[in-house]
Every structure is written in C-alpha cells, then in structure tokens.
Image (cartoon, rainbow, N blue to C red; front, side):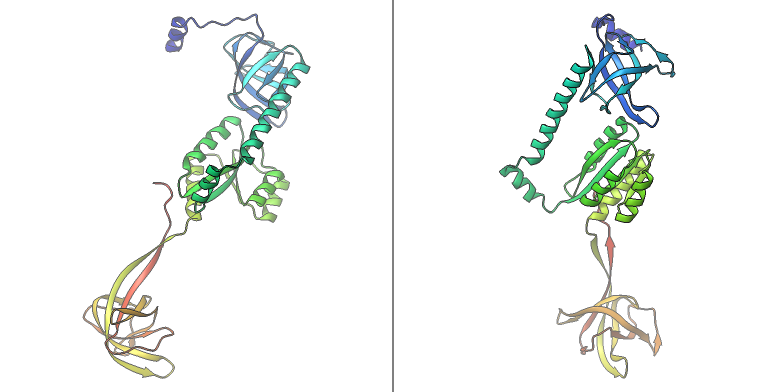
Length: 347
C-alpha cells in the first residue's frame, strides 16, 4: 500500500470523478440466478446504476452494483472495484470497460467489435501459405492432444490456457479447441466427440444431459478443483500418446552340448550356463555362429528331470524353446527380458 501511494504521488496519478466511467474487467463468471457477472475496477470517472456500457465485444446496462462485502451501490468513484449485473454476454478478464451515451450506441460498438473478432478468427484459421505447409509437414510426427476447457470464472480459464500452452513441447502439442465459463454442456460433448478431444472441467460439473451424452459417445470428462492435480494428469495423458520405449535387459547365455527328442515335448537342448542366469519366464534368442536363428520364449526349463524356476552360471540344465525344434549342438541360447518404459514428455 505504501509503495502504491508513493508511485501515485511521484507520477501524480489522478482521476476525474465527474466524467463517464471507464475501467478494466478483473474477473467474470456465469451465476445461475444472476446471469453474467463481472468484477470491474473503475479507473476513471464515476460508474452509476443505469449507465450503458461496452466491455470487449459485450454491451449492457448497469442493472445493479455490489461492493466487496456484497452491499448494493448506486455509484462507484475512481479506484473502486465493483461487481456489476446487466451484461448481454460474458466478457473476458482484461477487457476494457467504457460507459457510452445510450444503449443503441453500445449495441453498435459491440456488434462491430464482434464482427471484427469473427473475421480475424476466420482469417487465422483459413490462411494457407507455403511456410505454413512446410511447418505442418515438419511437425507431422508430433502427437496432438485436443482439449475442451471449462471453468467457473474467466480468470481460471486464462490461467489454465497459459498452463496448457506451456506444457506443449516438440513431442506432444496441446490444442485448446474451446474454452469457456460455466457448466459442461451437450455442445461441448459433441465437439469433443467429433474432434477426439478430452473435456477438462475446473470447479464446474457437466449438465445431466451432457453427462449422459458423454457416456454414450465415450467422451472422457476430467473434473478438477486443484490446478497441480490437473497439471499432473495432463502430463500422464501426454505420456500415453507416445509409444513406450522397449528396453531389453540381458540375463544370461547357455551353450547347447546335446539335444534330445522327447515325445509330446519336442526337442530339448542339454545346456551349460556360461554366464548369468536363465529363468523359466525368460525370452530367448537362438544364436548359430553369432547369427540369430530364432527368437521366442522358454518352453520348459529342467534340472535333473525336475522343473526349475531358474538356472545359474556354471550349472547344467535342459531347455526347450516354445514352437521351435531345430536346435543343434554348438548353438547358444541367450536369455533376456524386455520392459516397456513410458515415454517422458516433460524434462
């Protein structure tokens, strides 16, 4: 507070109370009983009940004003934060708030701004260039996670959109198809179904019909109230889009010293374990003159006619390979195990 007062004194920051008000939207939300509600900081002039205004692409008339304690106000002088009712739509946090002379002028300005915003969106989405095509080809191997984001207030939408944008990297790109304030609707579910997207709700719930439609269309809806839990879940979802890394761990090798043909079993190799360990559940490859002849799994592992779970270095055993019988003296059976490691998307 002292620093704010000092800066205001040094820069001689002043406002004129007897002019039409202007300010900035701090927060906006949809209230079930009151409709669109915006928290506005009056920066200049005095805002009065009944004033017509334009805020971003939205217009309206101040139907009621409330202070930070919920008390109703008739006017708000400069540097006063107030909650206002009476908007025709929901503005965005950061939009400029300006009082105008009458409702027709407010409607005209709002319509013009909305048209320009729509034209800018269409131009951005339809513009094609060689540079853009080259970029698409270059990133063709990049996985994309489509998201529809709904939150309780505009500030949460803005923060979460920035967070999701920062999580994108060269492996997985997050794309917010739609973001908005309010409950998850049937329209959101239909868009998610058509675009293979997931729906994230932050401090909001899906409508009953939307929930039923999501179950029918098998659309994934994730509801959160803590931003860090949401961040962790998105990271896990991004990892799931990538193919896991297959890592091979060497276990041991055994030399074939004799072969036996056993009815109903097939060829069994009498082996000497030269290195490591051979396990009953090992994967194996058969090497002949260091050339891989076959790759499969251990069919049976025995030691002195008894089934063994593992045979260690320096011991003799009998090994059969599932679905393979062409084993010869001098071959080497190499045992290994593979594990799937989830791909990391966040360093």
